[in-house]
Image (cartoon, rainbow, N blue to C red; front, side, top):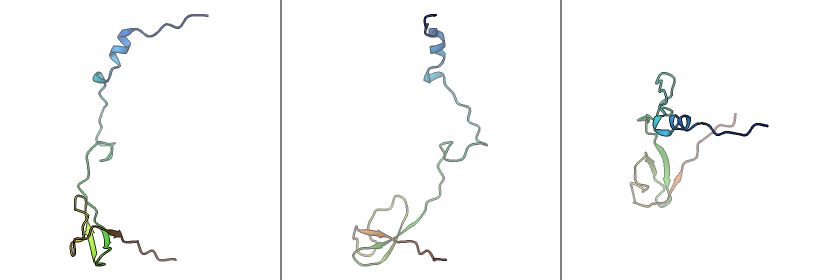
Length: 83
């Protein structure tokens, strides 16, 4: 049997993190895979637990009713038709 010999240090030096550069072909990557965020902000509908008013929040909005200032909001359920 032959003894195992570790790879040479030059091979390990060439494979370090600093020298790794992936090819970024932007045509084949989606926006999320390439690290570019979409600027679409989705609005989510909520109901205030205190005054029952409808509140629409987008990302970054404070979680607070715009009518009474209450902080407990319930997410509206989707209305699915049973076909």
